[in-house]
Image (cartoon, rainbow over all chains, first blue to last red; front, side, top):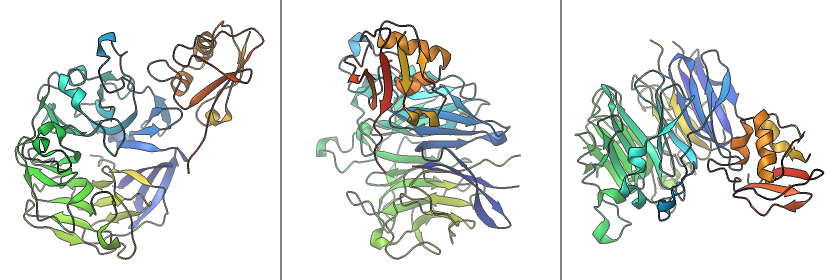
Length: 364
Length: 89
C-alpha cells in the first residue's frame, strides 16, 4: 500500500507519497491558487476547494482516472425580501470543510457564511441544508478571526450511522442532527468563552469552537480545540469538560483524535491569542494517551529554536492506523511522524502557507 | 454588436476569448458570453448574480454604474472590458 498525503496551501495543492521510506511530492495542482479545503476520498478521488479571491470559491474533483474537472459550487438561494435583518450574506464566501458523508457519492461541505451543503452525486450538484440555515438562532452566529462571516469548520459523521451529524461553528457552538439534517439542536454544555461578557460566557451559542475531532471507533468521544482551551466529551458533544493538563499552552487550532483509541488525541498548542506563535519559539505537538488527564510534549525532529510556525485547524491529520501523522504550518513547514508523534521528519520541500493536511483513505 | 474582452488573468482558469455578442445592456452581453462558456459566469458574477466584489467592468474606458443588476446600456460599437485588480503576495 502506498500512503498518500494531500496538502492544501495558499498557493496550490501538493500530493506526497512514500517510496522506500521517504516522503516526496509526486503531484502539484492549482499552483498559485489558494486551497481552502481538500478531501481525498476512496478510489483516488480528491476534492479540492479553491478560494480565488477575485473570482470566488471554486470546487474541483480528481476522478479515479486521474483527471481533474471543475464542479459546480454550493450556492445559496436568493435572500428573501423579509430577511432584511439577517446579518449574514446569502452568498458563498468560501468552502471551509469537506467531509465524506458515509454513503457513496455523499459529501458535506461547511462554508462561510455558515451554510451547510450536501451532495449525493459526488459533487455534481449541491443543496443547502435549509433546516440549519433557517434556524432563527443562526442569525446569532458571528464571525471570528477566520473571517468576517461565521463558518462551519467541523462536520462529524457517525461512522455507524450517516444520519447522525455534528457540526462545529466559529462562532456558534456545536449543532447536532440525528435525522440526516432534517432538524438541528445546539447541544454543547460545559464550555466557556473567556472573551465574552461574563453573563454570556457559558452560553452554548457563543462558544468559539476551533475544531472538533472524534474517535472513529468510538464516535461518542469528541475532542475540541476551543479558542480558550481544550475540551472532551464522552457523550457525542453534549457535555464537555476542560482538559487543564494540556501543555505547553491551551490555545491552538488543530486537534486530531486517534481513530481507534478513545483516550488518545494530538494538539498543536500556541501562545494565545493575539500573538499566535509557538511557546518559546519551539514547535511541539501535545499528546494525551489517558483521555486528557495528562499530556506529553513531543518535539523530536521539530524545530526548537526561533520557530514561529502556526498550525491552522485543518492542518493536522492522522491516518486510519493512528501511527501516521502529519501537520503543516503557516510558514510552510510540513512534518510527518510514523510512530504516533514520537519523532518527526520534514520532507524536502519549502511549501507555501499550509491550510489543510489530509491522508488519503487506505484502499481496502 | 458590442465586443466583450476579458483579462488575461482569467485565462489561467478557463478559455475566455473576446467575443462580439448581441445585447443592449451589460447583463445581456454577459449572458450571451456565458451561453458559450457556462463556467465563466461563476468567475465574473457571484451566486446572487451580481458582479464579484473584486471584478471590474469598464465600457469604453469608463466603469459601469450598476454592478448589481448590470443594467448599463451598451451600443453596437462599445467595448466591454472585464478585469480585476491583482494584489497581495
